[in-house]
Image (cartoon, rainbow, N blue to C red; front, side, top):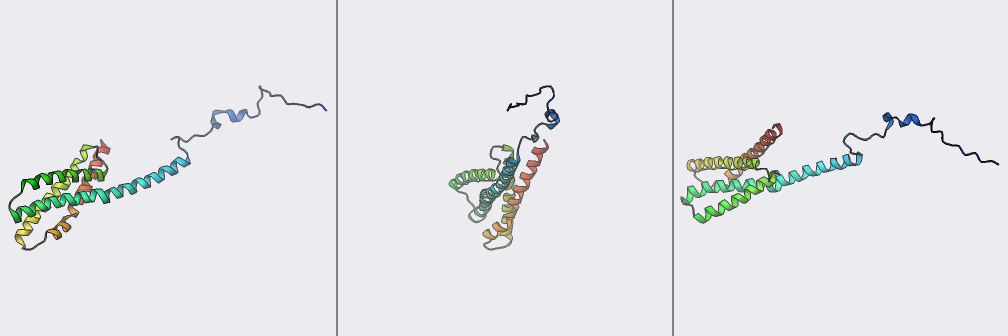
Length: 173
């Protein structure tokens, strides 16, 4: 029996219709596939969790310590009427460390425009210290811890809102 092998007809191709550019392999516009999108979704969740952890365990303790320094200045000024030079140098060094904690907690350690967050926290804590000094003059008693805890929300929120405002300014520019 004779074997008949079909030959390829190059002039009349059967599937020539699918060789047109309209039927080319579809590639997503961004060059990502579904696995990459799933991984990106997971990393966004992890990034938000890391940001929350940094705000909770680095930013907030830095703000608390900065607030305590400022209220401590008012406490020492009112009760002891004298500042020891060693205490001032130690406070400046600790303030630098707390500034780094605040900057690292908001995640903007390399951008110096975010130093305004540290300045806002220090300024609002200084205002709270002035109010504490007036409070101590008007009402006798031991209220350092209570006043510190009551006024702690002011520098925490001030730093948050200044960071948000700085983010918006940088996005619009």
